[in-house]
Amino acid sequence: MVRRPAHYVVPAVALVVLVLVPAVFTQTVRKAIFVSAEQLDTAGILINPPAKSSDETKAELAELHRLQETRSPAQVLRAQNDDSEEDIFVFKNVLGERFNREGLPMTALLSDHVHNDEGIILNPAKAFFQRPRPYHFDETIKPVCKTKEDRTDYAYPSGHGTTGYLEGLVLTLIVPEKRDAILARADDYAHNRLICGVHYPSDMVASKQVAYAAIGIIMNNPQFKKELAAAKAETRTALGLQSSN
Image (spheres, rainbow, N blue to C red):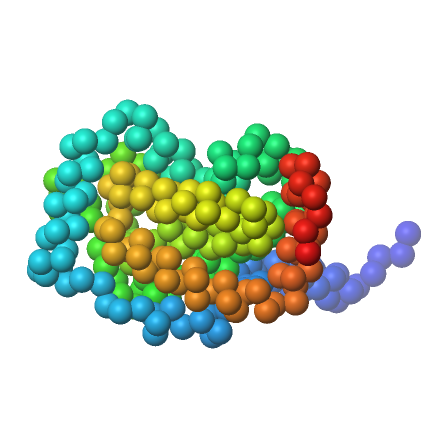
């Protein structure tokens, strides 16, 4: 066997290192799919949240205390269930058991893309306004849903609330016959964030405004139109509804 000089080995090792190092340090960057932060300046369209010492904040905290004292075990359970799910299938109680992620993969994909963009357009506003969560501001607020010790996990606007309203608006394009019930469920989903004790009422108002602003941009996105058509056909077939243009 012919022994090759050592200098033949070094380039091979170097090549392996050069190939592996970028793979180790590469991070996945979250990208907008239907609407970007450049298209919708969320902080720019919202008013400032109520000041900490304002009468409005005091009234909002009083409302959270009222809900905290009167919430039933059933209300807590529903709020906790909503806390754990952020997709279009929170509307299953409106459309029935056949409306589920497992049976509707194209609808699930559309929902996941909408939820992806919610975070992209909302997080800059949270960082801009920096409104503390109510349980960080008032230690007598006792949440019953997941919380974070991180005080940079800001409240305004609500991510869950925006997701609920935005997914609801998308769903009204799929099943317009159920529009009123879907939007009522979106309000209920948002209200459950108050039952949880993790948001103020004005966080929900802001979330609704963001969702309605976002849907106007999203509806003009070509990829959204394509995914919506597929999800619409899939969902309406599964629910036994007539095709709708």
